[in-house]
Image (tube, rainbow, N blue to C red; front, side, top):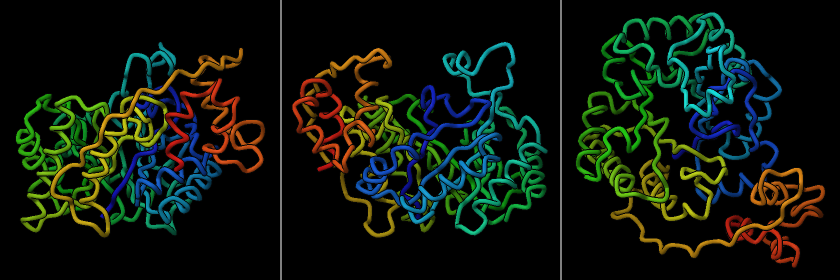
Length: 370
């Protein structure tokens, strides 16, 4: 059972930042204590870590991430390889701004295999699972071509088959098609509110149940999410998913785990740690209880009163693009910022300077230290 969270690459935006061509940046590694405290308070038991071909071959970066994961979850991770942009007429920044997800096909089997071999060299002695290719929408409905190509990568990289996950076709939706094409291992499934765009819980329950029921005991929900400001369809989606999981479990076909997208503190509507998203984060936590090692799924979602709005940050140094960005840097800095001298963020926020300049950041973040 996996109660998990995705650690999106911390570049651009959380929707498209994973598709860049060059080395990923993971701010988690530079702000470890801050992120570790939140992952632990959320009782995260496993991490899904996206990589691309370039990042997978950076042994130093992967070793740092492995060390972080060992501290956060005892090393329980899913490593997933994302597609990378191939459009040479536009920069990565332009493609990210256009919300491009690449072409949904492996660009080079040999390059992918080499990248997976390098990643396996780092994670070989761990319990890491390997999700071979994220959201293979470029293969259309051709499950045989897709499975054959994934099998080739697994063989060339000499990966242990029992640790490998193949995503369902399209946006990791059609897991039954992948199983029918001959894959008998673990299956990766994704689900989001926009798959149906309805506020009726039963429709989400029926969609998910239909998608995975014949193979549920091999399914890991490696991505799911919702707008944590909680529009009607977002609440219906998460509750419908919970109903589908409970229904399958009642039939003796339990799903293996679920990973929320995402755990990057970037203040967007999917950010687990942003105070504006607190009520939604409580709903996600409720859903994930069904995948924890100990407690069962509670009978009903919690009711969390809305928080009062936080004030605006006002500190505006010339090097920062906004007061919020400046205060975020201050909040994580151990040399000259909030954490200097071994202080906690909550302690730093009690100082007069912080109350005057970074009151918004203190409101959003420091209260979570308590």
